[in-house]
Image 1 (cartoon, helix red, strand yellow):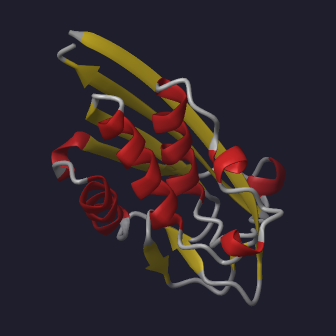
Image 2 (cartoon, rainbow, N blue to C red; image 1 turned 60 degrees about the vertical axis):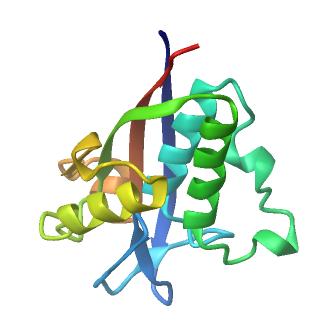
Length: 160
C-alpha cells in the first residue's frame, strides 16, 4: 500500500458586499471573503492539500486569478478537479482533516453541514471529514475580523 500526505492553507480578507461561503455552504454573515473566485478558504486549502499530496501544481497555477474564466468561480469546481486528479492517479482519499480560523462569525452550528458538503463533493463518507473551527483570540487580521483562514490535511492511499 502506498500512502501520500498533503497539507493546504488559504487566507482571504473579509469585506461587505460579498457572500460568505465556507466548504460550499453559504454562511449568514454581513461580510464575505474577497477573492477572484468565491474565495472559499476551506475548499481552497483542501484542494491544495489533495494536489500537494500528489506533487501537482497548486490551485493558483491551475485556476489563475488572472483569467476571466476563473472570475467568481464556484470553488466546488476546484475541489472536484482535485478529486478527479486523485482518482486519475490511482489514489483514494482516506480522510480530510481541516480547521477554519475565524474570529467571527461563530461557525459551530454550520460544521456538520460543511462536513456533509465537503464529503458529497469529494464522494467520500462524511465520517472521513474532520472539521474544527477556532478563533485567533483577537490577534492579527483574523483576530480583528479582517480575514478568515483555513488549514487542511489529507491522507491518500493506493493499493499499487
